[in-house]
Image 1 (tube, rainbow, N blue to C red):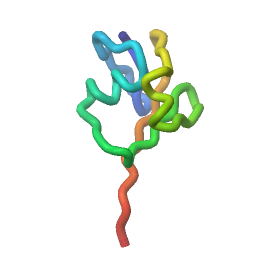
Image 2 (spheres, rainbow, N blue to C red):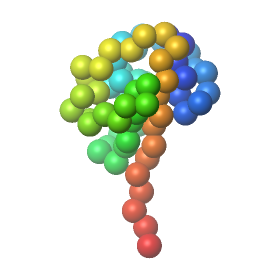
Image 3 (tube, rainbow, N blue to C red):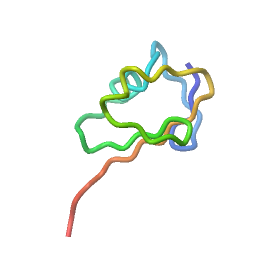
Image 4 (cartoon, rainbow, N blue to C red):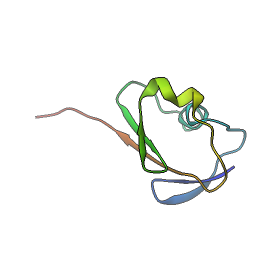
Length: 66
């Protein structure tokens, strides 16, 4: 499916949900923030959030530092 991920077009085959995209990209951990079409999602919502072609995802890894 063609999606916009962090403002870049990407073809991610075999995905149907936000959780599928996170897994397909090899991203892990609770330290991720995902927005689907400008709506921030809790990790518990990823598996239920269905995608459509051309949807936009912003995926940000949260890191702590000092």
